[in-house]
Every structure is written in C-alpha cells, then in structure tokens.
Image (cartoon, rainbow, N blue to C red; front, side, top):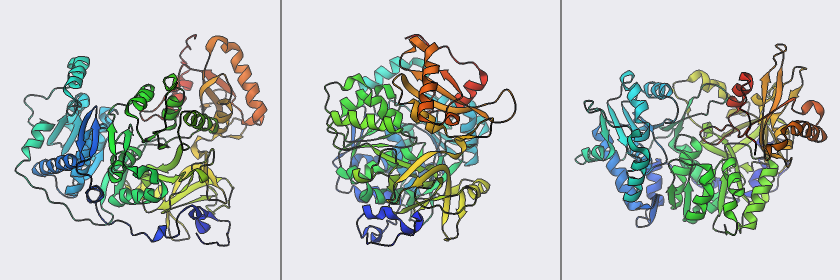
Length: 585
C-alpha cells in the first residue's frame, strides 16, 4: 500500500492494507453460485480425495456425482428455485451433498441445530414454510413429535452410519441399539436417504443461473443477546469470503488434509468447513459428533494440515498428555474464533505447539454470523499480536464508535466495534424489525453492523476485542466492571484451571449486579483458602472495584453445544444458588 497521511480514523485510513499486495482490491470478484465456484476450482481434482468419513474416501468426481443425484431427487420431490429446504444434520457427507444440491437448484439451505428442542425445530421449519426436511436418524424422534404441526410433505432420514465402513456401521448399531429412530410404517412422507436418491434417477435438474443478492443459506445466530435470528446469507458471502482468504490466509490453499470438527448450523462451520475446503481442494475429514477430549487422538491419528475451531478445543489439545514425544510439524494452519482467547492461554498454546514442531502461531479470527463468519484474521505472524484478533480481511472495514454519540473514535480509543464489507448478510429472515436494529447507515453512506462488542484499533490496523458491551456488569455502587479483565487475571493464577465471570442479581436491593467469578480449580484440596488467595491476587493486578465481589467453585465451566462458555447457564446456576458440590481431587 502506498504511503499516505493518516487521519487517525481507521475507516478512512485502512492502515491494515499495508499487509496486503498493492493490487489485491483490483482482483475481480466471482459472480457465480457456490456450486459453480467449487466445480470450477476443483475441475482438475476429480480423481483426488475430497471427503473422508471414518476411513471411507470419496473423490471430487464422486462428490460431484452425489451432488447431482441429490439435486435430481430434490427436484423430483418438487423443490424449485427460491424454495427453502430445512436440514437437521451433522458434519456428514450427505450434508455436503444437500448444501450444493440446493444451491444447484437455486433453493435455500435452512440449517437448523438438531440438538435444540423439538419446539424450536418446529418454529424454524414453519417460519421457512419448508415442505422438505432432511434429518439425521439419531434425531428422528424429535421430528416425529412435531411433524403433525408442520406443513412437511417429505422427510428424508439419513442414517449416521450411511458412509461408514461396514465394521464401523456394525459397531455403531451395537452401541446405539434401538435408540436410533425408525420410520413410521404408515406415514409415506418419511423416506430413507438411499431410497430418496433412487427416486430421482429419472429426473434431471439443471444448474440455476446466478443472480446477485440471492439467498443461499439461512444460519441462526447464537441468541446470546436475545432470541436467535435467521441470518440470510447470499452466494456472495461464501465466494467473497474465500476470495479474501486466498490472499489473507494462503496456507489454506495448500491442497492437503483438513480436520472438520465444526457443525453446519453455524456460519463458522458452514463457510469454513463446508465450502472453504472444497475451494482449496483439500481432503476434508468429517467428524459428525466432536468431543474435545478426543481432539488429541484425532490430531495424532489423522495428522491434519488445517483445523478450524474455538479456543477451548485448541487449549485442550495443548494440555493433552498424549502429545508427549509427538511431532506436530504437519499442522500448518490452526484457526480459532467464535470466542475470546485469553492472552496467557494464547501464549501457552503457541509455546506447546512450537515445542512440538509447529512452524506458525495459532491464527485468530473475529466476526459474526451476520458477516458470514470471519471479518478479521491474523493474516501473518507480523500482525499476529498477542491478545488481538488480527486485521480486517481486505474487503472488510472495521471502525470504533462512541456507543452514546455514534461518532467514530480514533486509534487506541475504546468503543463499540462496527463492521461492513462484501460478505454481509441480506438481513434476518422474515424479521425486518431486528434487521433494522443491526443495520445502520452512517454518514459515509455505507451500511454498518453494530457488533455490540467493545474494542479498539491500533495505528497498524490491528483489532482488539475487549468484551461484549452487554456483558458489562454494573455493580450496586454504579461502577462498571468488565468480566474479561477479571477472567484474564484469574486465569494467570497457578491454582486456576478455568474461569468465567458473570453478573448475578443483587439480592439485597434492586440496584446493580454482583461480579461473580466461577472457578474450576486445579486442586480442590484447599478450597477454604483459595477464595481469599484469588481475591488477594486479583486486587494486586486490578483496582479493587474492578475485581470479583464473589467466588463460586465448579468441577467444570458449562459450555454451549459449539464449545463456547455458556454464560446464561452460569447466571441461572448462580441465581438458583444450587451450586454443585465440587469433588475432592
């Protein structure tokens, strides 16, 4: 980037562009569907492996054939351009086939978390007016309980064992026994996947024409700030994201092995796990039900070159005793996002990985479902500053505003992070009111998304996220406390294994909340002394009013289904006063 006089405002200066090639913004953006994109990118890979599911390997040619078969069957079932097809699926080959089959037709992939309750599944099916549902068999019982209250005409049931090797199929059936739902005999709306695919043998679905700003997928937000909303992502969200990553994270495009542990019902998983690998031409190892405790086993066995996940996954790998004597030099890109990575945890992860032969630092990203996942990324080690989330990807712009006035702040001033770019969602599905709350047209004429996150940007364009604005705790005395500051300090204490801080209701009066630290100790043999020790330690690092006012001890911090700290669960736990007794270790 050529030299320029800085104004002090990130949205104007865009200082992060100095890390990118001069002509990066001149590169033409793809104008095609996501299905057309992967077919073009991998036209020379048809004989190479694309999918690995418990040892069963499918080439790119076989994957494209399966996508065509699925699109023919969906077309035969009446699915047309603009229709919304709902999915309650896991990280499986059939999920990949369905995503691109829908896209080939021009239908919308409505990805529903299958582990949520049946009532939520029903609402999302009905809101989308879906007549076709694809569901993995282990969650069939939920569908049977609500199908009579939907307009579904076809329910395609996918056995989780479908693409497993025979010995693995037998093992799963022995373990699960009769727990896997069976199709109701008299209800002809239900059909198994293989029979459904066979039903489309005499149909032929043609590729739909690309149209700008056409919905490709609906992904539901985590609901951490209210009721989950369906973000409508167009084809451009996917294709522009990958076009950025070719420049911003070229390690992905080494065409080797990727371990896919993120689910398809979050933007991070769908874009980075179900689209990016096939644009890069890698072999994608699919794990339908990921257990963080098994992460080390998977890495040692598969030896992947690329992994995307959340901080707790990579921390569990770094802490695993199974790494002793093992080389990890095959790990090229380890990408973490979706939750805050504490500075000391980041340092520990990098130290452990380096000692086992890793060449690069862990890659950190930051974004939102509404932007298709990553907005910033540590594009190289030069801008991979500890505690930061990197620099904006080159088609994105990030700025900091004063939450009260809306005025843009200068470098290193803390305020609300706002973002805009070419991967932005079209809006929330059937929810213009909530769309208008998150979309804001600023004086520069651009539409900006207000993130609700507190942060700042340095003169080099490096972005730091401090905390959620809505996580800020107002104490009974009116003082504002930021939980992440307390968490960062407490996590440095040698007796602390994990910690999380929330504000609990003040029972003495109606004013304010009590900053409460939930701590998982490494050794529970001296809990009676630990609270005093932690309180003293915290007060040596922070002003007294910025510290926790109460401590609770747990065996483990509750996590959401995608590996983030479940702050709502902690709030409920604290307010119920039913803290489980910690086991003596």
